[in-house]
Length: 113
Length: 112
Image (tube, rainbow over the protein chains, first blue to last red):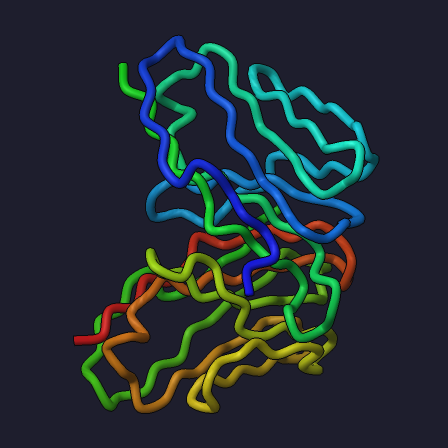
């Protein structure tokens, strides 16, 4: 069972456009992490959000944690080709059987010049 | 500080063979987790080690095993390889069990 649902699965936009990807869960989670993974590489942590309603900015990336701590979004302003990658959200798993983190399936973002 | 190092980066094996993958965590990190990533299933948890002890195990068959050494380096082994084992195998290290995880570049395993 997938604890986290990410949408959309795929997003293709032109350089300079904005985009938003979403991560949702039916359960409340204590913290959530966003990663970006480029082809042939491992995921790289972008941010951890902990507090309901929290908003964090990382240059052109804005991360929001829902008030109820069941959803999160990542907004990219004026996307650049370097933003291309697989965006993954992950939460600390509620039980040991899931391991340390449970990952969503990811949103593949392609930014074309 | 050096990052997480996984070796080898690429590997091609034949069905029925066995394979061992290696992960060297960031210096000082004691927790190592392994994940399998495929296009269809995404990132799936394999197992987690902390101070040479397996803490958690995902829902994979017994052909998948691992271990951690006293220097925190970890290995995973897959025996009797199947075509479906073709995947990117990722290792992540963290200082402790509840701290931020850092991923290696992965080992791309192709089973033919």
